[in-house]
Image (cartoon, rainbow, N blue to C red; front, side):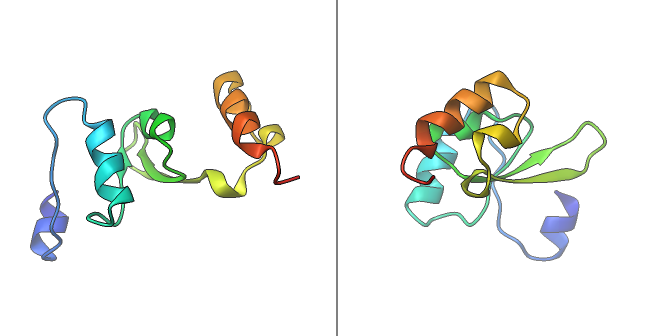
Amino acid sequence: MRALHTKGVNFMVAPYESDSQIAKLLNLGLADIAISEDSDLVAYGLKVVLKLTTEGECDYIDLSRWAPDDVDSRYLKQYLQLNYVGRL
């Protein structure tokens, strides 16, 4: 956060579960990116998320480029199957 502040990047830190608010801000075009410690934002329809790792790095997740066979998680596989119909 200090690096963002020193670079003049506007950001908000949510004190509690804020996944629905983050998704709404992104869908309205009021935010450019979401960084999260978990994958809950996917449930709110976001396709691109920066997910924090335990090492402090970020994984870039772009579900619009993934197919169900690309993932190991059964839950993510089921989610992608729901949204993959018609993209075959």
